[in-house]
Amino acid sequence: MTEISASVLTVEKDNATTIFYNLETGKVNYFHIDAMDGKFVPKNNLELMKDYALTISHISNLGLDVHLMVENVEEIADEYLMLEPEILTFHVEATKNEERTKNVIELIKNSGTRVGIAISPETKIEEIKPYLECIHMILVMTVVPGKGGQTLIPETLEKVRQLKDYITENNIDIDIEVDGGINDITSKQAIDAGANILVAGNYLVSAENISEAVKKLK
Image (cartoon, rainbow, N blue to C red; front, side, top):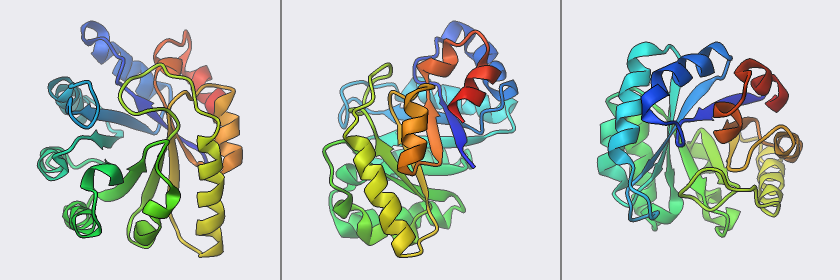
């Protein structure tokens, strides 16, 4: 079954609470928090995203799907783990080596939170194959990390297909999430490629009827 994770990256603060309510009643499955440090990606929104995550954790029953686009993975992960997110995802490009990557996986697992590893468009899937049997989700970035409103890069869906084939052949129980440029057209392409969790931001936030937009994505 396809699940929808609603990105709040482009939500304006003035009407954030209303949008959060509309997204939840529109039947999304998670709230997607894109935490960026201004180093791993150019934009720094750590304060705003932490504020949104705190607000959502107080007013919503939906789980947080936290995506860390940061260099200091361990410190920022600790801050979000206190909110007991449904899943916390970090970039393999940020941890850089196998030992650190495994340590971060254990840090998140030991808190009782599901673990995800993200890969940017230029990263080959071979980089994450060693970790697939000890994590819960792969996040394939279908745009360059760092800002909302981008167009999906078609070549990234080939990585989704390759990952889907690999986990099927090796009987690995893991989710594949895609993030970037998801709308009612690209959602079908992503699902056909093998993704089962779709991150959507602008498409949902700007929709006149969020519930109908969610149905179209699924």
